[in-house]
Length: 145
Image (cartoon, rainbow, N blue to C red; front, side, top):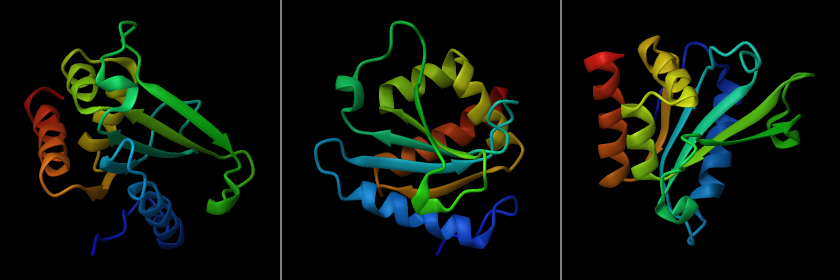
């Protein structure tokens, strides 16, 4: 069992795990890694942020504009968020995550900051590729922030 992040409530962590469990059921773009993190961006600091790395997302391509795909769901009724909070899903594929981290894309910087500040929690990692991606994320942060 994964311990609750100190910066997140037990209730919220439980709801995020349930959401990720549902996403694991999707077969067309299998979930490899899910990370709940606290954003340091002013416009997202109170929001619930979840990175999901999906095999085949975006046709497995790296965005030529060097932007990770983020979608915000205001309110997110299943999570029972506070007024004004949104669920922010950061969706990517393995190759794009590697490029974003290495080249320091904007949203990747936010994710790296969360990892560095111990404000990121692995919710799920597929045993092989997902665990490798989680290790790579932590290693990139440890090596150069």
